[in-house]
Length: 134
Image 1 (cartoon, rainbow, N blue to C red):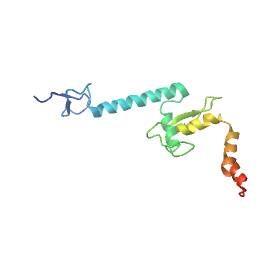
Image 2 (cartoon, rainbow, N blue to C red):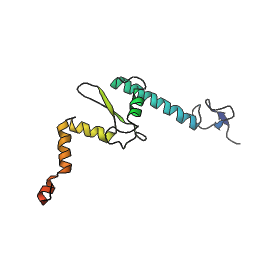
Image 3 (cartoon, one colour):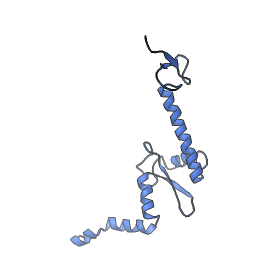
Image 4 (cartoon, helix red, strand yellow):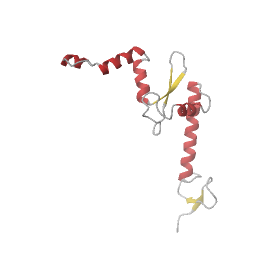
């Protein structure tokens, strides 16, 4: 006896799904509902944590060209970009990938750290040890 088919509650009338599949939706509709719920939960978390109005995360994402504001490589396609904020004022600064956001955290948002890093990259101590020109 072939397995009984039940209709998905979101699909067109002629769409049927195997009876053993749990829940009222087919796999495709279930994934779509799950994605919408996940996006709504993220939107609410951003609103509650950073005070961004509904849709501001998406607007900021588009304003930055859909990339991390620092490295410009990460797109947030596989892992959402983090909301970066000033810890002193709480003001949102932009969206960063996790490595760039962590780098700012390790540097404690001190500009001197980045100036020293810039000088280090262009004039490393080992170069002076070898006697290379600067």
